Every structure is written in structure tokens, then in C-alpha cells.
Image (cartoon, rainbow, N blue to C red; front, side, top):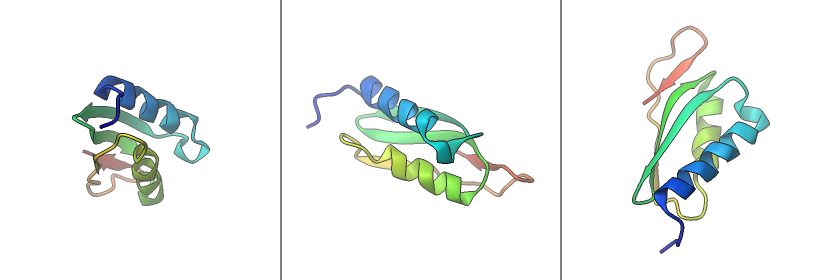
Length: 79
């Protein structure tokens, strides 16, 4: 088991997403429970959503949930 807490994992993923140039303009909230990552918020397109999922897979991640809904104009909603 990874020694980091869910809070530490969420903070790491949040920092990785905010520092990733491909994620510019995204508004993503990260929550973690027992290593299971939940991403919610808005991304510009499906490529950005896929990138967010890739970034969330880090040491200690057990699963990532980021189901995209229908795009609203140029934004995708993650829930």
C-alpha cells in the first residue's frame, strides 16, 4: 500500500494538473477516497479530458473516474 494519504495524493494530482501545459484553461477538482480518484469540472475538449486521466494515474492511484458528458459549446463537463 502507498504510504501517502488520500489528501496527499489529491494534492499531488492537483499540482500535476495545474502545472501541465496541456491542461491550460481546465477547471478540474480532484477528490480521492482509498486511492480512487474522482475528477470533476470542465475541460476544453476530449483530448484534455484524456490528458487529465493520464495525469491522475500516479503512484498510489487505484482507479480514476472522469466520465465526460456531452460537450457544451467548446467545453466538456467532467463528473
